[in-house]
Length: 299
Ligand SMILES: C[S@@+](CC[C@H](N)C(=O)[O-])C[C@H]1O[C@@H](n2cnc3c(N)ncnc32)[C@H](O)[C@@H]1O
Image (cartoon, rainbow, N blue to C red; front, side):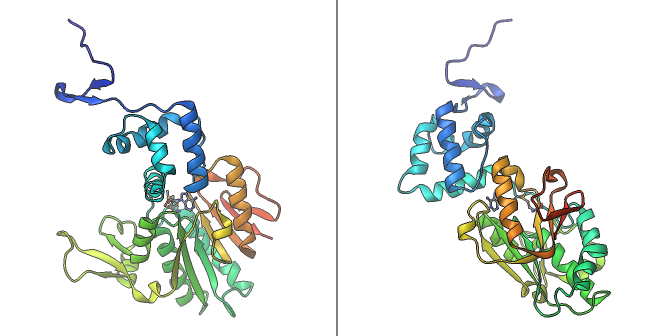
């Protein structure tokens, strides 16, 4: 059989059509891109992840009609770069989340964390504050809000509480604040939670009904766009429970340490920090005591 020949700069595509090959990132371009990501986008992706960057950004370069990374880097650093930098950050992070994600945390909060906080008087005089520090589209925050409301109607008695959602991504935050979800997205919620805490749209949207968190809970939530790597610009949040889950993966080790240290300073004594199940801290900072894997208490 005769070998298929490709002209340089092209690769095979289905049906014999050709596509331009993905632009390659040189080591120096990777260094520049990593610096831009670190300094402007809140992501500390190691420069060794060149193939990841090529893969994720190749399509964007093609859409912009660019065949190499140099003009793309110039665009990012140029006068109009802010919009493209936001786009760049969005294209490198995933917003995957769900109600009750890593359910063991919510079971622990219900059975142990919230009762312990209530016992030490949290929520009696000032609000018990739950902070979802990388809240994405909000399901983590709303799961916590529903859990709190139920606990206050039951064993904990009346407590004052607030939930705070923050994220780097403005589009994710808009969805979190809108608090509106599809049937598939609410599939993880028990039936009685759905009937008590969600309102079904009166008319279908795009052929399907959507579901919105009730106003009584929405009134208790605040949202802020923040970069966890830029503590100087963070609003003054002090919390009793901080969810810092599935976001440390975007930071290199030194930045992970800095973010954890920073959030610890915003955690009240006796409060809890929850990391993703796969993000347990190898060496928690002084004052942060492991309670269970991926759950820490500030002493
Ligand atoms: C995979 S989601 C995690 C959502 C939720 N915490 C969970 O565990 O289901 C990761 C989120 O981290 C956010 N993120 C990434 N880097 C960030 C940064 N430097 N500051 C704040 N948020 C960041 C992303 O925008 C994304 O929404």
